[in-house]
Image (cartoon, rainbow, N blue to C red; front, side, top):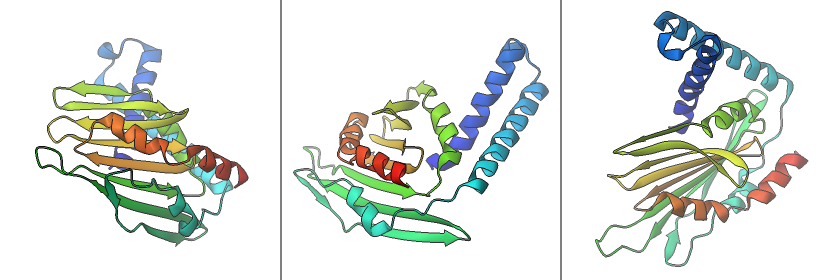
Length: 209
């Protein structure tokens, strides 16, 4: 779901920036704002396509990438990790995933976490949206959505108060997309899970590739 959110947020941010350069946003005509958003989206898409066309990097085999999934903490159980590599022309995408369950709380609810890592080989086309999202924030009575920076890496986090669920997405070294989804946990708990995923080693792999 976060991948579907990213383009919309990018367009909004770019549109606001464009309107800000030409005057007060509240006074800008609706048509001008829409036109600025469309132009910004087209420009970003063209730039991303141009970059992608010149760089192809072989993604890490899913059997090796599985080793970067977090281990189950004490009191938690992990399912069998899953992995796959999908090719389309010259481009390949490797994805690994695992789910974890904790001991039931006093209320009987069972916390859970899902961790996923995606290596598209060349992920710089999504680096710009992530960088912009790390500066975005929105808070309501239901929860919040905000950009974050974790260990120097840009990301995006959301929290739903009613369901006690959260998502944390981080782009490591402009290449590895990490998605953590938690239920029955505070958002801070996902930061602890992320800390156990050897981000420094992922950065080294990106530099080698």
